[in-house]
Picture 1 (tube, helix red, strand yellow):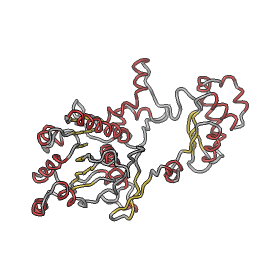
Picture 2 (cartoon, rainbow, N blue to C red; picture 1 turned 120 degrees about the vertical axis):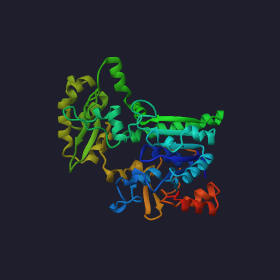
Picture 3 (cartoon, rainbow, N blue to C red; picture 1 turned 90 degrees about the vertical axis):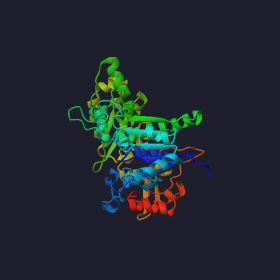
Picture 4 (cartoon, rainbow, N blue to C red; picture 1 turned 135 degrees about the horizontal axis):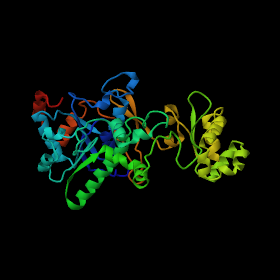
Length: 404
């Protein structure tokens, strides 16, 4: 069996909710030993997010939490207690990387800031990620990815021009920033391997996500244009949109970007009249008549099955795809081929479905190391096997309430 890419890398993980845990999940998928710290006195907010196993709300039942933390080990530990903090410092001595995603200042209040950790482990890599970064006038603004999406400008672009902002789905920046977090940690580890130097990384979720708005920012910088909401339209191509299909709430997305695709669409729709209209040659001409084209395409798609439309159009070279719902995703042949959804054995649920790795390394593929641990499951393993504590010390920690 191939060795995993990050075998031997040790991560002490204080990440919580979504963006942070999603990044350390990547590290765990590729072989890093990730020890997650959580206290039952203040559980991770992700444990309160639906969907729940069998529809029953409970801290061990959140599908979202399990998806974000599969393959990690966990120790229940209260870092606000002196005894708990001493355990944290021992784990820092063991670790290569410490990650945290609390509101700025939290780790410092616990006397676990970078300077303190570096005094314990000089070459430690510490990554802190928060909504707005560790410094600046909005540094203490605590929130989630839906707020970061609004601050970063995504919400103003999502929706229809004649309606209020709809924004992108869910806490959008929670899904964008983990890619930057994981890459930053890997770069820091490479720097340490070459120089022996650790470092502190301050990653702002909002700033990381701004990279995805570079065209809009440049358009304003260079041309003075402020981008606005255009629904499913594209500024440079038409027809471009999501069109109704037969059935209830079924849709197909179609994006025509070339004259060849346009003529293929006309042929498929049996609309020789549109193909022969010289005013529709070229993207500019089609964009000028986008409303009429959307109406013509929707009239053709509305009575047809969405999957049939997808197959018919793709076969003729027209970019098109069904707007998939949850059922479609679990039966998508591409996702099935890549085993995107993985069933893991769970201590109480029989099996627990989670997403697989989002990318595939040919020589060192991902290996998901098991379902998310339940509270306290790994305490003995972490304290005995990793830290070498004896029974007397563990008993003292239990008596002090440090392992809750």
